Amino acid sequence: MRASSPLTAFSILLVLGLAGAAPANPSKEQLARWLKQFPKADSDGDGVLTREEAAAYRARAQGGGTKGRRGPPRSFEVHPGWQEDRFPGDAVCYQSPERIKEIYAKVLGPGRNPVTSFPKSADGALRIVGTGHSFMAPGYKVLPKICEAAGFRQPLHLHLGGGMTGSARFKWEQENGIFQFEGKPRPKLLASIANAQWEAMMWGPYFLDRPEYYRCWIEFCLKYNPEMKFYLSDAWPQVEQLDEIPESEEELTATIITRMGREKHEAYCRIAGILNEEFPDKVFILPTCDAMVLAAQYYHRGELPGVEGINRAIGGKKRSLWSDRLGHLGPGLDRLEGYVFYATLYRRSPELISDRIAFGGSGEFPGARLDRVFREIAWKAVVAHPLSGVRDEDGDGRADDAP
Image 1 (spheres, rainbow, N blue to C red):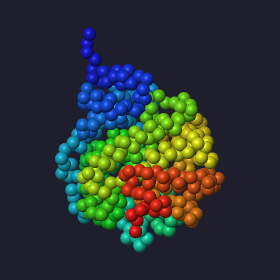
Image 2 (cartoon, rainbow, N blue to C red):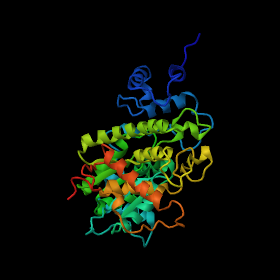
Image 3 (tube, rainbow, N blue to C red):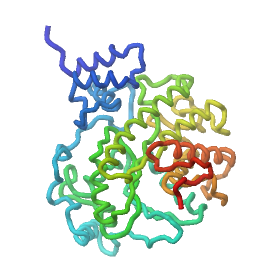
Image 4 (cartoon, one colour):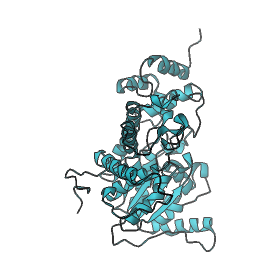
């Protein structure tokens, strides 16, 4: 009898070895055993097999994952150049600030300024550059509105994309004109980072992220702005983390959602932890994951006024926490993400904002009561997260070490 291929063996191991357990939540001991037997599952080669790496490897073993699963790819080829000590010599990041500006000016064409800059704020506003995708877009959209109500304008310079094209890895390749973008650089952020002053950078996460996808941005930013800090969103639970898409919302219990959130929490805490060893006190988590887990718990307790369901794609209710299987936010949840951004960046609770926030819309949903709950949840998530950089032991709504 012909021996099974490693992929087939791994598929059988995961399907049968986890029978009767929660397939998306293997123990550390199980992960360690799988790593010894199937070292190729460790996609970033760091000697630690994460749950997301295991799930991606199983998906490849099973020929693409769960039946009916749609959306962006969860396993994909990454250019081997990411394993080298240096990027190609003509990468934009190695050029002078003036040369980077010239490269982007050529991309933009005549009459357009290749450098975006803002004056230093007297009211404490952070000048922020950022990448991201559709999971970050809601928060990016409402953050300036929240800040305006808090009494200041929010300087933002963003390079976004959909799905993978908004990931930190993709944007680095695109901006530098390397790997899949060889000879076609588009240094929208690099030109401004090298030629202007900034206080922070924000990123959205993506499947199978590695520390090196963020390290390159950090090193470049600190070269020109040594005091910058960095903020990585950990997204939130997605039903496609589960092996089987639930047929009803009854299966999406608070316990299940909390477990899925823990997986995200662990994956991105690990990345941020590695980066903080190299860049102490520079990298922080925007705990949108914990905020959405709390929101689900509040919903199950009947404490989200006006919210009708968990996931619209499963329960059919428009006013749900999530709008689809992939995990895009439901109506009004952009506020919660924006409040998490604000609370982490400015280290104070959105509950302290007294002025009306001009979000737009009819005001019917989310109403004032739900908005107050979102603010409460955001602050709870931020002060409880070990890598948010914010603590509020005295309960005054401001970080304890704030001046």
